[in-house]
Length: 307
Image (cartoon, rainbow, N blue to C red; front, top):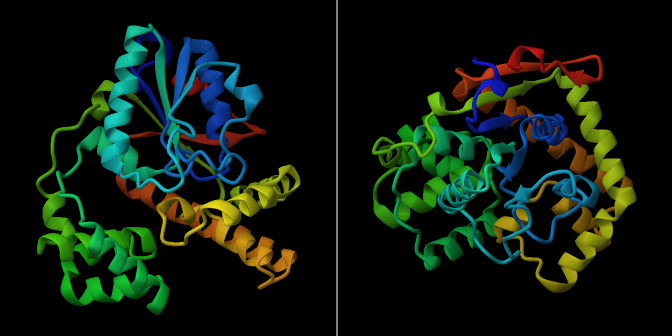
């Protein structure tokens, strides 16, 4: 990979939850005069400041940040929406002479940005409502079984452990009569091809990342994650909403509803976070083979290889 300081190409930083992406992005923003653009599917929502680990007030003062907390909790926000928004921000960065640094843990965003996105028709509201009800009635794994039977090609391609992805694939099949995998085979050109960006994937040992996840979730509790969830419960909480897929939200809501104790809720949330990080690592290994793997060492990332 060419040295980052030698040109003005956008910098893309992908990594699992709690891997230190934001810290690295801030360091590179300082070195390059950069602006940070969000590529995390939950940090776009306004109501999850703490639970989604959005940059805090101090970090926001260090450099421009875009696409954080700009979506209301009841809005649906797809990868297509994100691509449109990030295209606007890339143009804005160019106009402002800011180095674009796109950082996050949503692998699908990065893949769509650098390899293109299939032009899939919108799913009618009626089908989404039906799917949400099926999820509540039959459990979040129902769609994986249906895909295995009715759309085996898509089943073999997607992360069937991710209920959001399996529900989406089932909805597309119901709405269009065509499997998601066939739509993906008609992908549109990439907005930012891999050759036109610096690609960095953060690599961590599972034990290290799991300890970070546990420590960070305890810190979230101390900083007011329960208050954040109580506000959600009082105002807009609906498990069918995409925003309600925030890891830890359902578990803490269960505690607030007196369905479990805080210790059990916290441990369940940590477990879900660890599983999510594992899925992220699997995605990055499989789909980001051309990215530079930056390894954690001695309490920091050694950025020498990219400078």
